[in-house]
Image (cartoon, rainbow, N blue to C red; front, top):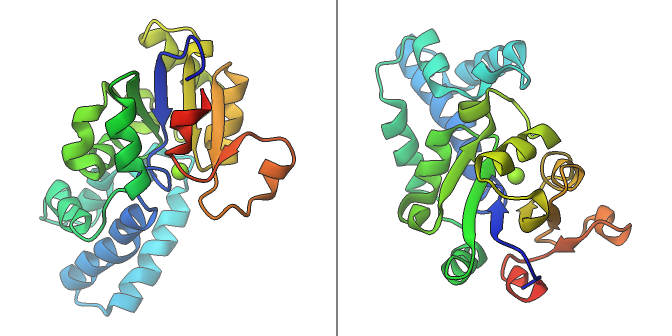
Amino acid sequence: MKKGVEIISFDMDGTLIPKEFADHFWLEKLPELYSKKHGLSKEKASDILMEHYDEIGKNDVRWYQPEYWFSRYDLNEDPEEVLQEVRDHYDLYDDAKEAMKKLHKEYKLIVISNGIKMFIETGLGDHKKYFSSLYSSVSDFQMSNKKPSLYLKICRQLHVEPGKVVHIGDSLHNDYEPAVQAGLTSYLLDRNGKRSEISSGTEGVTDLLQIIDLF
Ligand SMILES: [Mg+2]
């Protein structure tokens, strides 16, 4: 591993767990609960929710908060229990599980996600034990996306120089670019090996196990 690296940071959705985990909650489970509550077809409920999601928009932190939507729709279910039910259908990526098991012995591992804390914790399940800190841009910093300032704030909280942190994620705009701008080393995760950014100079990996041999 590269000299001086102390912390390895992972994005959550699409990096440690398939994006379908969060999508299932927002695009299937919530419309289902809404349709039951209001006696509508699931299709109709889904159309209504999509409109509401768009009205609030991804730049508003409420968009990410199940509590906001459950209270707005007067749903009695516990968002955490609903999320756990969804989690039972998904698992962390195999390479992610293997990489965290190996890497945690040598480095501090953290998560930096723009999903809320409940999604990170429920998503990791028993694997939470490998991480020393979990950061949600929305829950911890009221930021709806991951800007360079977020990465810098986290480094400051951890009392570590950005140059000693490596961040890996599957988004060029939320992971690679802002992390590099903040002075971290970053790798763009490209599991299909088809992303054009990587051939044009962006550092990438196709598998999280590759990280072990990179530094
Ligand atoms: Mg992601």
